[in-house]
Image (spheres, rainbow, N blue to C red):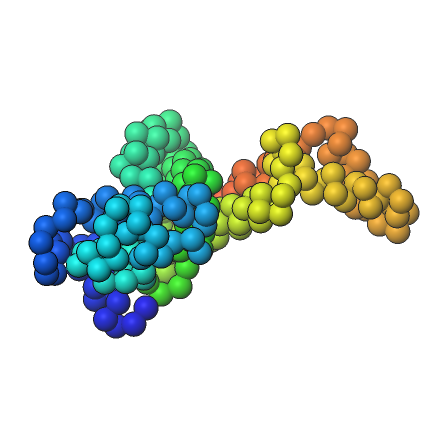
Length: 256
């Protein structure tokens, strides 16, 4: 974003409801504009979104749209804010997680688990968010609300501010990685019959290892175990549990 785009995005996301910069009132709202963009992105990906496409969706001219939103960068910022689940929807689950594990140190682990699964569902509902939420950009109230709740879960654990921030980034990075993998597999035409990315990987590797398994005995044995005992489609939760195990050791060390 340029400095002008940055300032415009701040005004749109954090300022009072915008009015058209000039010209007659068209009956548009920032929410309606953002939701139109979200609908296009959900159907076609972020690359399908343009000011012209959104204007056509709303049955207005592109110039009319520019009276509310100065460009695509600002439009995408509004779309992210509209598409992210309301973090307030997490509060009941976070409170239950905290209460249910209060005797085990405040339930920070359970709360981060609720938070991570909620974030994952948000990425699954709108895969283009993975592309739209990278790099230096203005974050809106909802996105900051998600960060606030994750950091609040770690409050009282004895971590420094930097450690708490890095912990949240670590958990979010794992969620993003799994969501990215799922998105890539779906985009490649996989997933027939509702199979997830882990199951697809087992199938594809299995085809190769049936002929070359002797060259990769450890891999063949691991996949054989998966086929016999199950265990695929656990990458999100398995990785999350291992990350939280590590954070638990750090929290324990800080409490000594």
